[in-house]
Image (cartoon, rainbow, N blue to C red; front, side, top):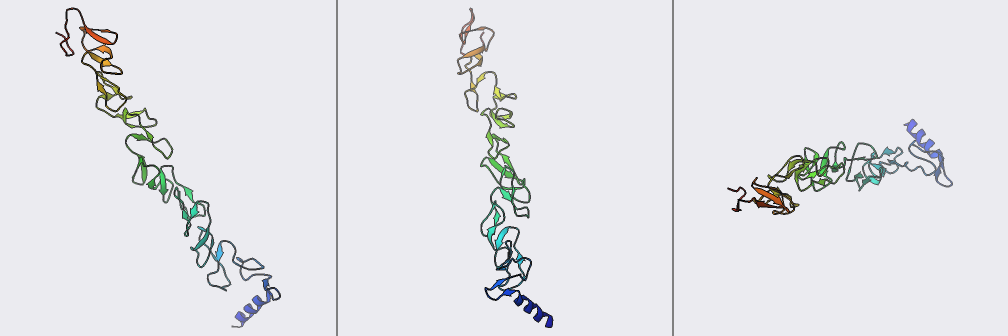
Length: 232
């Protein structure tokens, strides 16, 4: 009891009674002359001598460690100083940035809970580009060329084709079909084994008994056009 009384008397002695300002404070987390709790600390009970530390999320707080009055990091906001979208809580003042695929993430930058683009699909906490799109290394997925059902690295590097009458690494139209600028190839006229631009602009003929002239396949002398590819 005597020790407690001595402590109180010592504390009172520290006060400058003329202007009610402190020469020294009761706690190392207070600064004279006012002896309010330092930034990052709060007074658990009014008049309590010892200041307590705010949560790492708070630059300043009151009443308790989690009631923030200002946030500790530029990427925190709200009353609870949560990390902004695109950032995750790493247990320190500054939030860490999520991977470009994620609009929200937890634990680490690659564990997505929401995706950064509507053309991404969330699966096992990873945001994959939808079919018909490819990952460009940025938030927005790039669209594959119309020839490709799927692609990677760039829009023309097809990994599968958009139509059954396309084939090869570039998903070109098969013989007998031409590219009309859409997914499905259009069929050439029966006279052509290959054509471009439209069905009647032949580049090769469908029968050895046809001769190519001005992009049209005429029947050789001695043959008639029967309205089918092969002549008899």
